[in-house]
Image (tube, rainbow over all chains, first blue to last red; front, side, top):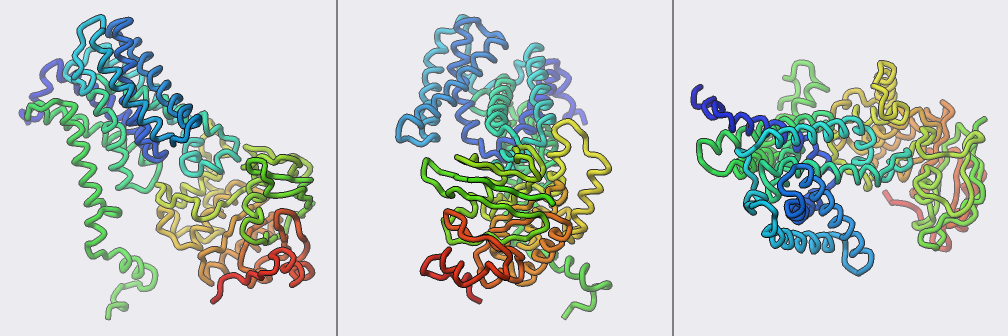
Length: 301
Length: 242
């Protein structure tokens, strides 16, 4: 077992492990709402729009978590609201408007980061470095994780109705627009917490891959969120562990592991896998036996 | 006797009226068929009663109270095509959603809620399928699952949008049986329907609309060739053949 535990003898690896657990679980849990609300592309746009906000924050206040949180939030809101404004005031549809804005914001972010007060490495923002996790990063991830999980647990009933039947939700007195804004806000928070680990470009993977995987495996909403959280956690820890031995960037390793899980589920999910569906199944037969025959022999022919 | 009273209801989409000045009173314990050609405003009327669309003028009341969003009085069952059948929810999970208006955000799911859910599943003969995902059901079972949720919500009014579309004969009969049972419990049922050949077996009252109320009354006296002509114009729609 030495090869298994060896990486975690180092203090920086212990902090990275803790960060993987926190970030993996939080992103996985939230990701279910992103996937079910079909916000994956919006989340992609948000992740790119974080960059100029982070750049401006580092220009104004340096590398403080609070500043980055605030800067990232404002930039994401500007892109989301700006996209709506452009689509309403022109003939463009909103997905084009948002895509145009976020890629402009992204370029502006790369340009701006040169002027940061402290020296920052662009690749650090883009791809993260979980091995550099400091104690205050862990606290940021912890509090963000707590806010996200508590919000989702508290609002799980109205959220479920909004996800399943957005039109019926209104008749039940649910504030659909308000909940949608809440989810977007939580996405931005989750991305900021995973910045240190995987960076803005790969944060999307941490958010949607576990949820997409579990969606191919499970049928019940209650298990989906927790299952996705646990899967995200396992993926992040495995990725971290592999990155130690294979010597590839940890963020990249985490996304590759999650991606591997996703393709396995896509192909081999017991119920919804591509290959499973083409394999001979005893399912219907068993069921008809259960219903019609007691000893099962009578229906062979 | 509880009554659904609709007064001077006008509903518009972008200033184009879909329903004009509709006045109607329906008693509880009635199973009413909502009939009219495409674009007659059937879905619009159901959604407006359910509180999903805000009317331009007029009001909808039940037992003397204005229907408000957030109440559990009304259960609205949308058309099949509008539902995401891949959604990760089981039949039981769906029926449990019916308790949410009562529970709100904070109250925990109690034994009494579990009991109501179990009764709903029993009543709709869904117990063997309770743990299935909703796509893994037949059309009739899917319709019954949504009826079970409405029942668990303890609604007084059931609004159904084309509940019989795509159902085979057996499924139609079982859903009809359940609607009649709900009627005998004093529920008010209103369902839009396009197959005129089956109206008599399902509905005790009919409601003809075509942008406005053409006629409402019990099936025996109101479901006449004349009213069908008036509602559907010169072209008589005889429903699906077969």
